[in-house]
Length: 148
Image (cartoon, rainbow, N blue to C red; front, side):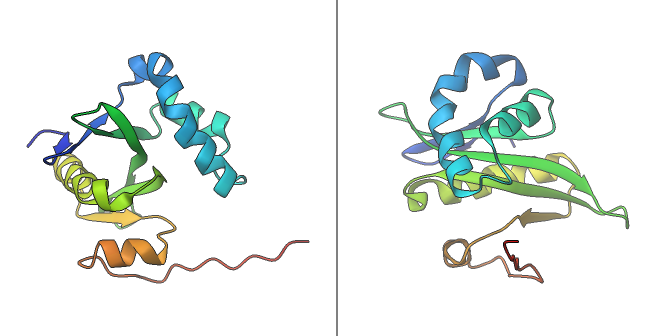
């Protein structure tokens, strides 16, 4: 199976590291949206650094007919202390996730299987993701913060 996801209207492709600089203007609005929502976790410069270093694979979802960017997803591969491998969806940014979430999930599954992963983990998944992906289960993750 290829590492791209397509549906009737949406295609998702990985962004090669050597094309990151050329494609950055199209990715920047998503990076800025992510940084506005999670400024401590995803400053724009850090997202770009991780992608350029190969620590994070960026995937662009776009409307096939209009060639309009819809969303950005970042994944990495993680080996647990037990040796089990997971593909982690570390971030997503976009609008109208109902249009692209299933294509993104197919891409993640294919990429995970191709890399020997036994599981997919979606970091910091909000409640909307649970509704959009009913075959996933919420596990022990919750975040509590207190500003000092």
